[in-house]
Length: 515
Image (tube, rainbow, N blue to C red; front, side, top):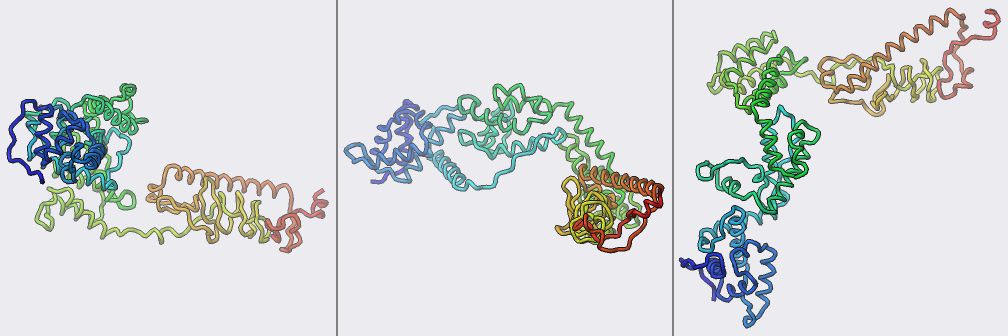
């Protein structure tokens, strides 16, 4: 005969003993035979329920179902098994929140709520590939407030040993549960969980390890390393908050944001784009807002307009419109930084269309560092010595080669002829020829390392030119050479490296004439 839910059950004298277990199982709809079978498995107190895992309950159900009725067996179907699991989940939560597991409190309403939580937990386990937020980057003091939010969000996606978010470890202190206004029941539950016991110790160690990984090699490590031996994630977090949320660091971030705003100006798209200009402004205003010193929208718009120094008529007109006009929705531009920035950006994009990188600065100067060398002579072999021959595919430290040459520092690019392996790019800028002329916009997109390589390449080129001029002048003073016609007779020693070239040599007759 199927068990039915009782309408109301009287309380028992011992709310934590076997009678309380019987009462709770009866609310779950278990038959008398099934209730006795579960008790005979050793579930004689309410505290025992919180220690039963879902795996243990599955094994218990198999044993009870497999036994004959005269040996304590009973039907333990899926429906009843789910209800008993929900009962155990409720007992676990009561224990986590440092509350008594009182069997007289358990009711049908609590059972339904626990069943919903059980289904939700099982659904999350089945969809383990759910998207989780990425771990935050290492701390930068100026970005402490958004970094703190990012760390909390990341920690909320990681489950503790009790299958609850790890954020309970770093929750605020001194919250009065009776008077504090929580966002929802989940937040209340987060603050009711006890911060004691072996599970909490394990959770705080895990939080410390995650926090340490993001703080090592940053300024923040100084303020939490004292807890490294205890691996106390909660106290380490509190130490970081006490420092970076203190008045000194807060004021420092505000001053840095103000200084950043004072250094921003927009003159042209070539030197500093309007998109970068407005993004930097918004970042600075966001820092000030995060540190409880927000800037009014009207002030933001006024600052933006004051820092636009472009004298183009269209841009000047757009700035005037922003100061006095309204957008398409009838809202004044001065009341919305986003609307004002979008309007000026639209005018700038129409006035200064972006230059296509393909057709920009096609002319390249000949590289003097690296490149496939034109070895001496007109041979077709691989030239290695400097000169002006037409060696194909050779490599030299000087000369103007044809084909793909290799520059220093592992940058590959073309010589004078067509490149074999394509141009070498850095952030979209062609750096195949390090000695060519670069615009301000191109240089701003290059890394410091590449800019240093460009400076060195041009410096070496200039030194080489000076050295070559000195060598030629001194050679002309020493002897008068005799120039031979272009023939293949001089290719014996330089075959393949620049043979058959027009060479400047000194003949025996010239030497005798000299002496």
